Image (cartoon, rainbow, N blue to C red):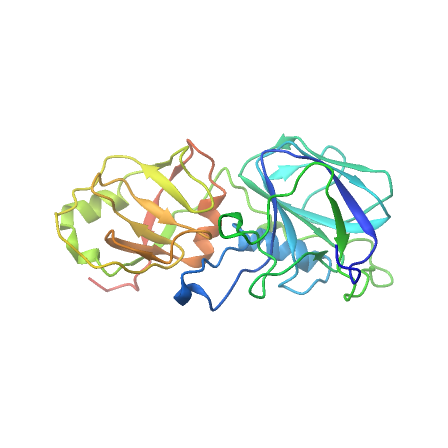
Length: 297
């Protein structure tokens, strides 16, 4: 570990179902075939940093589902947002934790992804100006049992202003992932490829998040849409793009997904609603609604 990093603050006792270091992503590299990566739920990750006064690009620990446990090695401030809850520490607020405390993420309320921020952000190596883990490209590895995490040394320490008892995220920002709203979708470049009745069927049914979903993309199952057999040249793909493979079951491209694709893209999910989608667990249902301005046919 580079000597510029600060003293140890956290020890990984177990990473649970999966834990990685993420930040706001690897921007400007998609044209070279490098995924953006970054926190799956950018809303929750940003609030974890915001609660501690960290820069919005500061690294956070992203946890998949539950089972992760950490030992606190020095008194510090942390913030926990997203899906999981700990046994003794409230979420969506700045919390002071003492040396020797155990952070245990065993109680999954709703959702999929949880974020753990530390005052100043985590110290982590960077690849292409980002600490986001993309193991398939050799950019970092998932956190492992026994690994020591350190606080970034260059950022100021957090403290509450005089007369302020605590810092809590507004209630309306503490999302209930069990009740996602209808997700807004903008028309994609191949929207006109499918017939009117297929478009209506897309918006008028609930889609189920399949178990074959991960940071690359979420698969949705339902009454498959009829996709006319047409050839197309692979073209750029945005995060949130809704692709239609030949079986008519949509696939939503996400943070670690490909930068180009050859399936028709019928739409693109609104960026903020991507954060809702990624917190829907396998088996949970989602519903889409058109994002086009009123009056557009």
